[in-house]
Length: 230
Image 1 (cartoon, one colour):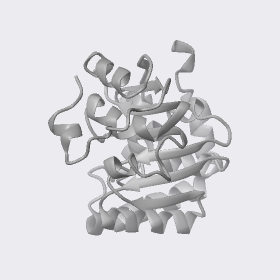
Image 2 (spheres, rainbow, N blue to C red):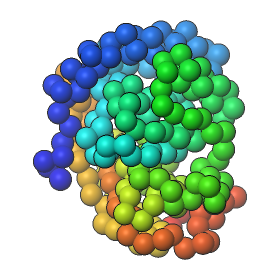
Image 3 (tube, rainbow, N blue to C red):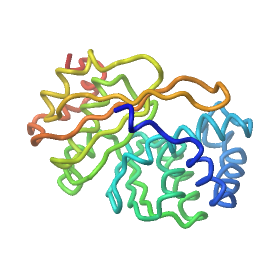
């Protein structure tokens, strides 16, 4: 997967091309942060690197015209920066907290992004017939440990599609091998990268959907976190 590392020179150029939209997103993030409890990172350079650039690190893994779901959208990372630079993608942002959904809808409307916001728990979305196994890619960042995250995400991925998780430097793949197998996924792959200017070591973890997820998953009632598949 070394050849799939993000090209931060190209990604910085993409942000520059859409500078007005990123600047407006930043203004909204800072202005609304206190009311919506969105992020502890508000300094402009930190937001640029840790939120904007990091969100775009997986941009090259998303095929043209893909239908993408984000689990646990929060403040909209990585989905909203991706939507800004990739107008060909169609996003469904799944977030259980109503006030965060209100913020996401404000940003989507203000920036004219191709995205819908769904107020729903990830485990409920995974059992919803209109969403289950319909997405080309399901993405998540800073949501849950990988075994639990797999149970949230893989039921939403179509067979042949892919789950993509934005993670820190610690490799969580060994703990999630059985979860991938049980949920219809293949082998976990990783793309390691370092954010520019010393802003940290990170990792993209991917899993291709090989076969349908058994009907009993996701289990719901908090079992994904309390009793993960290991």
